[in-house]
Amino acid sequence: MSAVDKAFHGLRHMIATGRLGAGERIPPEGELCEELGVSRGSLREAVRMLAALGVIEPRHGSGTYVSQLRPEDVIGSLSLTLELLPLTGLLEVYEIRRVLEAHVAAQAAARCTPEAVGTLFALIEAMEATDDPAKASELDHRFHLEIARIGGNPTLASLLSVFRARSRKYQVFTLPEGPELRRKSDEDHRVLATAIADHDPVAAAGAAQAHVAQTERWLRAFMPPVEEDDSTG
Image (cartoon, rainbow, N blue to C red):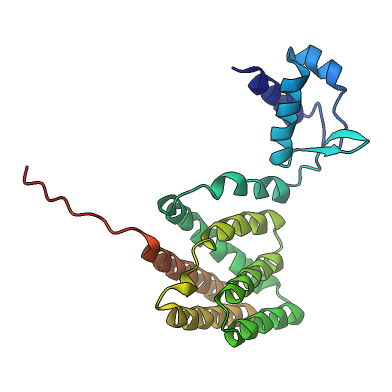
């Protein structure tokens, strides 16, 4: 194990065991270096790594603190690695997304207010009115974010946002059949929003799952063709 790894796992253990709690200032460098048996350079690199994961917050002029460790913030750091997935890996993740989007939609149907429903339909109308694929993609993202917000679980909302951010790198609306895909997507959004407005969790879950499955099929259009094996052996 390298010195940086030693410092990283040492700090991580202090936080995981509760020795350093959320919002607490971490001990001075000298103390930590002595306890962990590492140099200041290795410790600082470990701190940078944990900061990238949203676990530690360096504050200029004040010191370094454990973050509030909110689940939604820690989950959000998954984007650092999830965005590296190739399309084949992303399509595997879609099986998880189908389940979670269905659950969130059902929760939204149970909890939605008239104001929230109005926001959903306003976003749909804006999507239908624009001819800009990039703007349509952004509005689509906001539509699903709003459903997750209504669902009431910030951690699930953060996880789904990470999943969607990766899939948005593939602009399906720019494909030759983009206008038809947009039309189908808009229809799906209306079905989903209507089920939520009707306070029908079962219909909302089904609509969400079908919509994600449809998006998955569209993403497969970006898959390179499989070469046929011409060998005769």
